[in-house]
Length: 221
Image 1 (cartoon, rainbow, N blue to C red):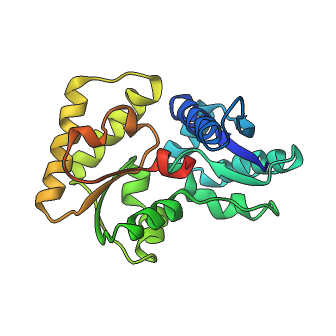
Image 2: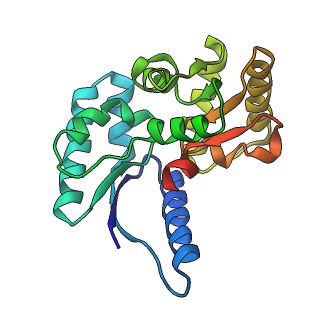
Image 3: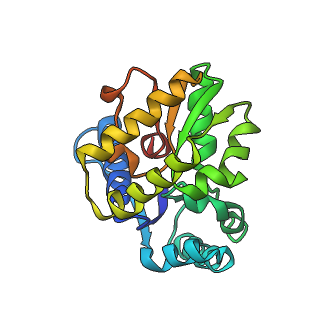
């Protein structure tokens, strides 16, 4: 069994989901008392968020690169960054280790491609939605990416950081997210990517008839 290296804590809420999904998948596949071999390096999220909000991505890259080196030294056969936003520094992180880094957008793109989706709505932090690092990765796989209006980008970002990342789920925020999804569907979206690892706490396939691609689930699988 290979050892999975997780860079987590961004936030703890979604890292818990990764841990559960991966272990349950191994148990379902192998039966009995089997579970996954995981090395988890959990960062101090406040430090990461300060890097994001101040634009100090160079420091953020150094932090995650150190995490990846630590995971490899601890025996990890692969590395996953358990957050969409911090894939902004995925290349810098991958460059310091000899084991593969499994990119969340590439995994999501494979899932979309299998289902024949071409035009997809993307929800996530303002960094994921407004900067090219994530959208370009999808575009190079052949997808047209749609994002919410500027006001809705700010609303989604606020809910992620002020509510979901601290474990708060509000009905009014769910309604707002579903309204955004419906707006994008009307504009031609064939599916929606939950491009922040916490959004699955708020929205699921049961809430909309538009196909939902939860990046946390896809990445863990």
